[in-house]
Amino acid sequence: MSVCKECGSVHVHNASCNNRSCPCCQHPQEKKWVAERQTELISGVAYYHVIFTVPHDLNDLFRANEKQLFSLLFKCVNDTLLALCADKHYMGAKPAIISVLHTWGQKLNYHPHVHVCLSGGGLTPTQDFTETRHKGFIIPEKVIASSFRGRFLCALKRLHDAGELCIPKSLEDLDKWKTYINKLFSKRWLPFVKETFNGKGNAIEYLGRYSYRTAISNSRIISFDEENVTFRYKDYSDNGVQKTKTVSGVKFVDLFLQHVLPKGFSRIRYAGILTNNQKAKNLKRIYHLRNTEYLGNPYKKMKMRELILCLFNRDIECCPACGGSMIPLESTRGQPRTMAPSHSFTPVAAMC
Image: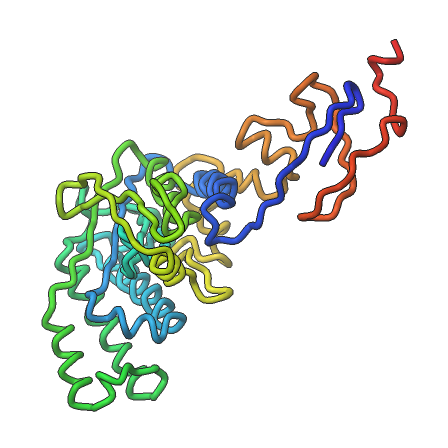
């Protein structure tokens, strides 16, 4: 709560829960993340959107071992891209990789997959900058799929053999486990690779939608009553046609909660030249080689007032009624507070 020292108007500021699964609280975080990542893009270089999925046969195993298998998914995605991009046939360099974990489909179904923003250029072992040899697709999807499948399933077998997995009862028998793994090896794992349209900035903006949003937004919920919830979804199997789905309230909560990540688990990872302890050094090197200057992240040291003003063009210390200065009033988070006595301050306008 704050009061204007010019006109005396009082404004209540709603408290944010800041939970990453909340559909309302993540927009400022998304805007800040996108703005920060924009400062790390390499001008004039193509960026690619890559999606890594796993067969639905793995869903039950993922549910029982989320923290381990989500981490394994990230590792195999990054290792696959780093190894293939290091091949001189494709790039011969270490690219920039930003990967974001997603666990849901439009119907709130359980669907673990990773969205990746991949640069079309990177640093060679001799610290020179080079770009991909194949414009438009960077690496064939079949090559990515084969390498990713092999890495993931081999690592999965090692975890099983070491007794580090919680195995569903249907797979406790060793012969059934071997049959299960062989079945997964025989399936086609289909990643998606596409050069992002509208330039490099669009790549980050697109990825930002997945970084700080949850399984469903309020705008997709059409109606609800004491028994059922109806929400809207896109049916991608039917050319993206908008459809509706109605489920019981209990079922809706169950669908939503299966997408709450384990406590402390980060859904955003960086690899390649964007590895945290080497990022600034690598970007300075690339910018220098391209005759430009790396200015760093200007948002990092901003105070909240400066950040909100920069991202949303709104001054939180300026009275929306008269343009005067706002004075914050002490209050207890989440509890209403009685308005300060009118005689505790005198508006400047009343003194004139």
